[in-house]
Image (cartoon, rainbow, N blue to C red):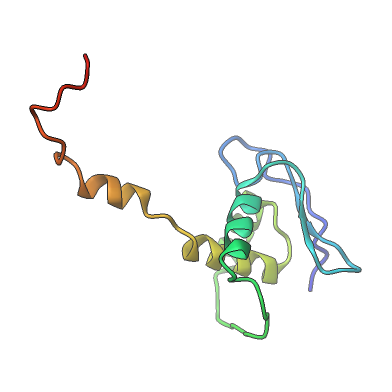
Length: 115
């Protein structure tokens, strides 16, 4: 595992908004500075029980450019942390946009909204 003490992601709209993500060497716990998308996603995944029992293994060939860009955007340096975040991000997706689109036009046209 690479050194997870990373600073980065200072561009507006990036995953860390000026923060950083690292793993405590003694406990293995992930620590993120500031309120980040990383923290929100990982907290939701943890509440859903998705982060318990880390016995799974994944492997694959990935473009080095894709990995570098993802690490730069998130401030995550360790490959394992990056993969875990990416999978958690998909797993906890709330599908709000799809639900919102599905009910488009469903409000009764005669409903008095007060304007």
